Length: 480
Image (cartoon, rainbow, N blue to C red; front, side, top):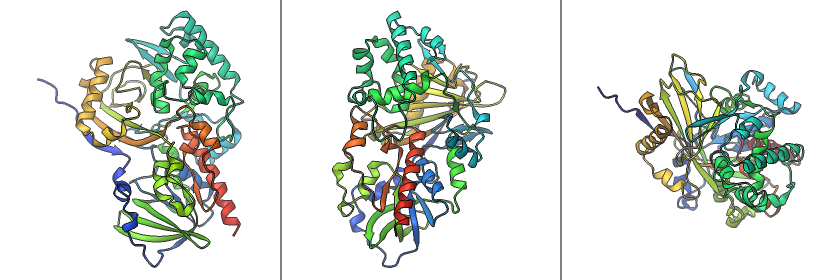
């Protein structure tokens, strides 16, 4: 008897329908503002992703309100559970914060990092039917199927990056080695360092998953900054069973009042010594007006540009250079027996999928979940993704995995799909220079925050931006 096909669950993930009705086309001019305000807060944080939640955490002792357009907090930090098996449905892990201030912050949130350290090997590469564990270590690099010149060149690159660890950091206002931001990672590897094309191709799934596009489309500075953490022997990574959703939940639970989910900001206007906000309450439903002394926009610039009118001194052109990648996360649930050496496992020559993790990591008697990450083709991926049928997408991803790991499709009972239309900012050549030079830095009552202001799509960048925004908000509030 033939086995029944796995069940494909309809789209989860981000909720574009929460914002699109108000901004496509621009409908806010047709909306009348209520004459009476529904209330007042010292500061309103718009967006309950990691940047917004971090900013709110450091402002939790002030009169604070947090708005979130989606159904839940966390942004791309979401989680799922299949028959008692928790799994990350988005952002899965972060690097171990060795600095004392970072460690203290996580302890304040009740996060036991030492218990969540990922056991080695952290990464493994699956190439042409063969596993290469610890693919970023010296031993792993020596096992890679590239010419000898490529192995030697990659080892030298790793050594050079390790020597630069104390120079490059998040949150800095200037770029060390700024010339690296003017060329693509592929150009830097192949032309400036003379590495064979095979090396670039082996790094392609890593670049697509972590940075939003292939080595030919991302800045060498951004790519090398990420690779530095992979090559370093001192870097450790942390993963909770439900991924970085645990961090988002810890931040949310530390706030005096929970974020207001399904509350979408659709308009901003100056009001004397403060700001007026027009908010759509999707739960009620209806519009209300709220007053604030300061507003933190912890949202992507694709949305901020629709909220910041010329009344605030912003122009549409100010945001035109922000570009975003799109993402699908597929949780394949069932009696999965696949064994993979790494926590994160990269797959070469797979257009549909870049990498996956397994929960639990080692097969046993119970169910497991394979969380497969599927960056959409850049730059044309977002529009087809918004139009894609979940059934079609699920079947394609399952077929792609079956090509590499025969038999896995028969073990999958359910496919859960998570769609992220603006998953991460793309650090293309020249973008980081633009952020630190030409991008306007207005420090009024509207404060911008989001990982895209660092130009690096990682949770560490989101947290740094949240901390910066909180400091700016306090400076504004304490001036009154």
